Length: 427
Ligand code: AMP
Ligand code: GLY
Image (cartoon, rainbow, N blue to C red; front, side, top):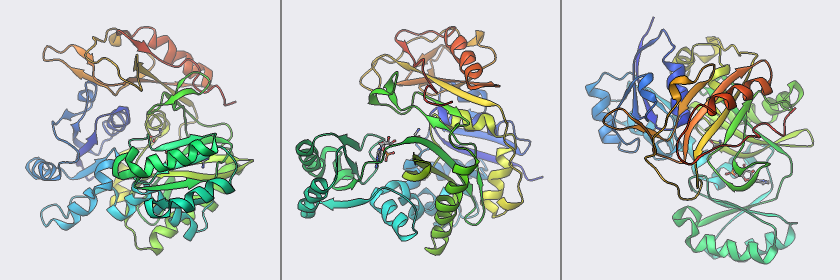
């Protein structure tokens, strides 16, 4: 059996869940997490490296005999970490789980993603991409469509680059503001979209570029407030499975979205060996792509990993060796839920460094640390807006949620906040 020394890049709840799952693998020799957080030391060794500092990553990989790199967040992928490894004679044999820089454009440029979908007949909202020189065309697009108006920064904007605006004049002035640099260079091009009405879900696929496996479907809850109100966050909770993503819906997803995406990448000679996240919306029973991400979702990973009843590292070995078709993926039939405990004020400004108590009395849930760190004396402190994802299994969604809530009651820090209605819109 091949054993792997893995370097996992990232520091959030997603990386905690990936680390938790990888740590269970008999194929794991050693796990490093860069930079990790106050909880990832349960599964491996934290390394103080930035996922964007490729030279330091190279030095670490070579000095520590790392044999596989797993990239949790999108930034290093969009910056080309896959190509950096392939182009370097010393790193060339060390696989990176994730797409090439060209493949990462599916997330790195919304215009690229829309054009890709149009080339391959993949259902998505009608769109127009504009820059400062074609803003008048943008105004015409807005006039031609019904409200609300959807405006998206083309490039990465840390999840903040999408505006949905009810008023036509306001949409036009926000379009100008975006092109004038509201999101820096990432909004020097703006994608205008037809508004689609429906319920969303997140579909995850692992691919070796040829075959693929569909991971458990999840739904996340992005708004800060109960009933999906208030500003968007990185995600306040998630549920898997998703009641409306039934066999009929998933057959449409596979035939009209997943297969054409994998085939399209192949046709266009875009190397892609990693996770694809399809952000979907169900419009009257038909799936449309809202966005692609080139990584797993957060907090969806904190439920998806619970429902993978196979060795994740064996699947990743299949991804990097082009043998995914021969690997086993079993899905746990139980429900999994996660509820994110956040700092008061998030997603706006919030305090850090608050002492977290009670995590040792948690039972029957899994804590995936996100914004936590250990002080020198070992005290667990908050260090981010999203602090800990509390994940649980249940025979029903309600049973799983009850466990998460019961354990959240045991955890405390000043300014602790969470949503009590995760899963409210699902059967
Ligand atoms: P994105 O970053 O592209 O996923 O957009 C963020 C959120 O905006 C999505 O999760 C949707 O809730 C919403 N959204 C984006 N595009 C559309 C659209 N064309 N129609 C309706 N809602 C949308
Ligand atoms: N939960 C949505 C995302 O990870 O982008």
